[in-house]
Image 1 (tube, rainbow, N blue to C red):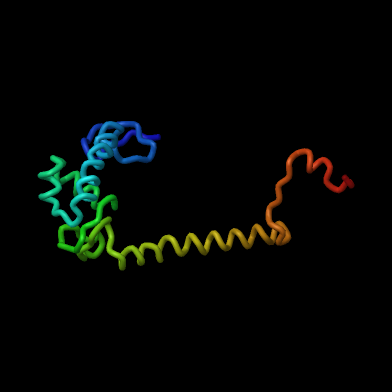
Image 2: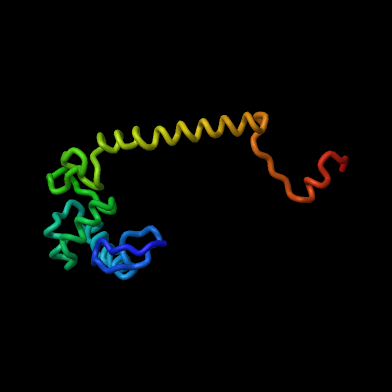
Length: 144
């Protein structure tokens, strides 16, 4: 737990890994429902139409797009990849840059995990970790 500034309002708060203070997080969650409901009834609406119908600020709607809660029908250029600048429909990275990040981060982690599993199997004699209840352990080896 650490003291950080809320990314939305700038107030300091005790964070448990979330970037928004509890008040802003609750407000953002509450404001999402009318936007979501409007888009269910009016697919392909523009940001201006959503803002007018719901009263939700553009900043909030753009946050939902960046957060991956909403997706644009087409790449209008409103959202850009934070790595290469390519137009995107949702999130922070285009598919190409996401693939590159996965290659740099996820693939080495998967390889490391596979290596660790192999080492564990060698230590266990290939049998894997076994667990027993206390009573089973006590009676193991005895005929029942």
